[in-house]
Amino acid sequence: MTVAETPRITRDELEQRFRALQDDLRGKASDRKDRIVAIAAGAAVAVAVVSYLLGRRSGRRRGSRVEIRRF
Image (cartoon, rainbow, N blue to C red; front, side):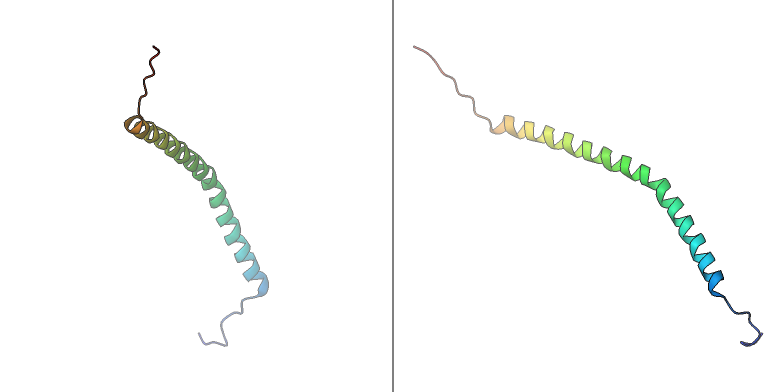
């Protein structure tokens, strides 16, 4: 086949294929979006709990106890 014999690609064919590609990518992204949001929320909660626990521990180690006596 020579260059002159190959069929030409029209603008409509290109648009149709690009739209099909975009629709496919949008479908995959929306399916994964819920999962990603759930994982991010779980990670945020885990970080908050770990930082709270580490803060309590360091506060106990460095905390001083003051005893007040009344005479």
